[in-house]
Every structure is written in C-alpha cells, then in structure tokens.
Amino acid sequence: MTTLARTATPFEAALDQGAFSALLAGLARRVALWERRARTRRALSRLDAHMLRDLGLDPVSAEREAALPFWKG
Image (cartoon, rainbow, N blue to C red; front, side):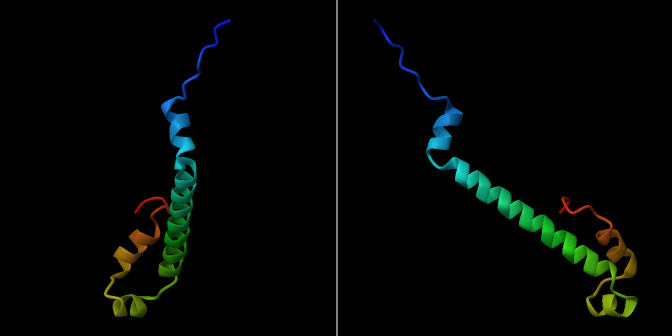
C-alpha cells in the first residue's frame, strides 16, 4: 500500500516556525497603540484653550485630532 506524504501549506509551515506567536505579539502591540491613542485623544478633548496654547496647539487643531477614531494615526 502506498501512502501519500502530506506537505504543509506555506501557512502551516509559517505557523510551525513561530509566526503565530509573532502575529499575536503584533496584534497586542496594535491594540496597545489603539488604547493609547484613544486615551490621549480623550485627554486632549478635555484641555481648555490656555492649556492647548501651552502645548503649542490651537483649539481647532486639537478638536480635529480628538475627533479622529482610535485606529487612524
């Protein structure tokens, strides 16, 4: 009886080489970036005009940045 050797697909081969853990690590970094953007944009939206001037920002620019969704960089 002849048995056929099963060859791994490129995806399976990559998973065998640790790509899955690299993918998860990349995803974790992306989520952390999104959380940081959301947090800083919320904080930016709470600053008054005087505080924004201290940062070198005008209120219109700050409002525009604060209104961006967390996934846009």
